[in-house]
Amino acid sequence: MRYALLIYTAEPTAPPPDDALQAELEGYNAFTAHIKERGAYQAGEALDTTTTATTVRVRDGKTLTTDGPFAETKEALGGFYLVEAADLDEAIAYAAMIPGAQHGSIEVRPIFEWSAEVAEAGVGASASPN
Amino acid sequence: MPRATDAHAVVDRVFREEQGRAVATLIRVLGDFDLAEEAVQDAFISALETWPQRGVPDNPGAWITTTARNRAIDRLRRRKRLTEKTGTLARDASIEAGLRAIDTGPPEDVMPIADDRLRLIFTCCHPAIAMDARVALTLRTLGGLTTPEIARAFLVAESTLAQRLVRAKRKIRDAGIPYRVPPPELLPERLDGVLHVLYLVYNEGYAATSGDALVRRELSAEAIRLGRLVVSLLPDEPEALGLLALMLLHDARREARVDAVGELVLLEDQDRSRWDAARIAEGRALVERALAMARPGPYQVQAAIGSLHDAATTPDGTDWPQIAALYESLLRMTPSPVVELNLAVAVAMRDGPATGLAMLDGLDASGALDSYPYFHAARADLLRRLERWSEAGAAYRRALRHVSNAPERRFLTKRLKETLARSGHATLGSRDELD
Image (tube, rainbow over all chains, first blue to last red):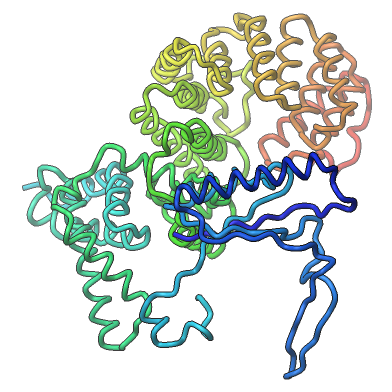
């Protein structure tokens, strides 16, 4: 199964000290290397801070653009991994290895896999998963 | 050939003993909770129809599992025909997968493996499922309690409980919660989770709160049955032994806790001849077996405390120094105000009420147990023993403010009246506190 590991952490108000930043980065590099070695890595990115976010909605054909993230929360989505895991226990084990889990939270979400027939029929783009 | 009524009785008994096992095996083969439950239900209906005429098979459990497997195939084929007819594409893949799982597997595959139910209980109690859903799912799939029965026991609407079950089963399937006994590195943490669910089920059945008395008794019995199952499948886990012992040692006193007219009887006032000697002996043997493994834990300590209470033939014969020492070690393992309260009560019995009261007053200052009626009742009792009547009365009033179930209310009201009589007050205080 494929899982998204969504990394929620508090956004720093001041730039972190160099050595702390260095340690965090090394932690992420080690984790990425580990899951690549195991063949579990599919994708992973860090996101810029929510101060750079723009939220877009289309209502009655009009595009509404606002500054900031969709929801203001104490912990913001700061990055993600997409991994292949045998089951939820394996995905949880990966999530626990992410450095952000030490101070923030990791949300583990299975990827909804469209069945082959539905995808071919072309309903995939418009139908809701349920 | 047995008479029809005998056959019905056999089906009932087999249902109790075998339904959890059959569902667990079918889930492993089919990978689908709902289909497994429906198929096993079908099999029991078949048993009710055929056993009275043709007689009870030699191995009723195997008959149920095999019949359930065949019914599952019937159901999957029917679904397949239906989707072909209506041209529905969605979920077709799951039907094919189900049929393949049954057809390609050798027939012995549906023979139960010893740990099928262990897999099931670990899956139902997975930490990724909400606690209330873990409890409901365990009782429904392993215990074979019906949805209305579970709803009555936990005082929730049937529709709410049904929803909870549906959501939990969907999560197991869609989030990929594995159907297995956890590997050694996860076992201690996951076993704790399983034991906690059983402990909650037991307590829900034991606590004298409102609700259907019969179903509550059933809950405690079910928790003990599942506790035995875990112990038989994981015989080297001392905390599993400890929890089973704890449940048995408490259950031994069940009959003596209520008198002929349904009033609550405190431990010190119970007729100890009504305690269940067989349960006490079994519980004590389990505690000893667990403690011999030298891996102590909170359930073992609580069981040891229960065992000391059960060992005393009179209240005065209770080994309070030993009980206080055990509460001290429990407090180190699981610090909580409730454990502190129990420790204070044991110390009061060992060193006198004044010492215990000083500990309780310290706890009172923290405010952590402000709405916990047993704290105020314990404090009232110590004040009563010290003959500080008016303070005792005030403490009983505080306890009454937080207690909801009728027998406990009546008990506390009785004590309050006695206290007020001793303190020489002419009136009993406001009416609503006493009714």
